[in-house]
Image (tube, rainbow, N blue to C red):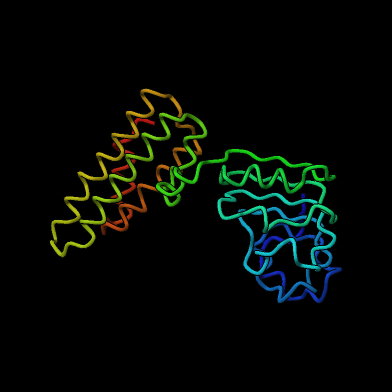
Length: 231
């Protein structure tokens, strides 16, 4: 969509809107001080609405915005989006609240904006799983994803109890908790055959996060994960 600048460190020399054509995401907007500096932005592609842009529809500096692509848009509401009578022509939102699907579609009804919404989840589901790193597994397989989320939640609670314990044996106890987590994921894979390379990396990151909280040395935790997993 947009390209050219690789990170926020390259924003130091930008003096005005005409130099903003290469921004590719909200992480690169950190150095911009206000709406007047966003006038040249015709597209925005990133994981969330960046700080300072929470009122996208009301910022005159976004008058030329043509394309808006959001992922992990769980915090986005219809009112935050650009006005339908503006320059926006394409809106894509992936991973959003299902309660916002209808309001967003209604906002752009009978306008020239093409709206594409995907992987919406209920507020009830998100209330329980918003911080679960495996939450999007339900998009691949509902039952398998729910089982993986439950496994992580159980492990997280158990590690939380260990982390608050001053007992030196807590790391040893963590081994059992972490192994149960991996074995639960092994069962998910055996039953649902759903864990691909990306999901394996997500599982590994979740495992390492739990291990770190439990005080397990990183090298040891990585060895455990590779030894125990069957996916």
